[in-house]
Image (tube, rainbow, N blue to C red):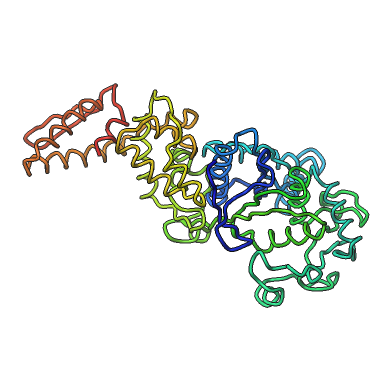
Length: 463
């Protein structure tokens, strides 16, 4: 059996992955807070852990892997949107309007991630469906002295858990000095974090032993992972921005509840745009839907993501987008109508080495170079590209894109003739004809026009 090695944040080293139960490999990934469209940075962990999910299924079998990714549908931003709609005259209770907003945003999220070729998780729990489990876990923490109730709030005693900070590599005192912690009269210690907070009449709330309220963010994932994967499971993943405080707090409350919790922790690095942090203030902030609506295929977005190792910052650039599109056009022209073989060993080996997607793509380039279409298609299936579901876009080329490429190829043909490279000039001449581009040489230079049989993939293959 293939040995998978993963960099475990908890141990700071790359380890051979050995599941607790090979018959049920279990992974939990922190999902979105559903108040708006997913931006491009939100999509990176989706593609990273979808690729890992595919690899786990490849090694242990699709029926032996359980992947859970949650939706946080208890949040002040969701509440604010619902309140604004209520004040604007929308019908229904606040809880109904919150649910409607969450339903809308979850549907957007599914549609956008589907477009990137991400498989749906086996379970996609909503926080509001696990309130009882959260209340029970909080009550247990209070009973064991790890949490306390005060003024309608319940807080976790951070200093009662000796290993707090081990995951993120920080000491409690360093965190107090360097972090923005809320100092509140109901806290025994500034580092204590909220497990439950009160809700007034203008906010959604649920009954509890501590009054009507709603859960804190961190307790949600502990309760849902325990309910769906058990007290101990294999992998917990998410962006490295979640390592502290979210994942650190998850570990503390889960361990103090007597759970083994996750054995392997994986964190992906963040995303940049043209070398800069993505932000609205810089004008380089956009959602996945923005790109899709601009005509960027979801498969191209995924390919760009795969080109960078998950533990390195990923830079989205227009150059990478164009290169990804050109490569995928060539590969799709090769694999059309071809049956997949077994996944080639170099591709599986690269992915098994700490999810080295860039190495897997390099192996795919080698397959394409030697004309192994069956191997290329099999490798694509493992990485979530070259599938029929994501296809069709490659047959569409904008007039501007076609024009730019044809002009570049005509210039290359002229240079080839000038340098007496008649073999390359003939390849371009015949390639234009095969692609449905009619070229006429005149005294003023070459002119061209597209025929109804224009084939963008054949044109791209000439590059």
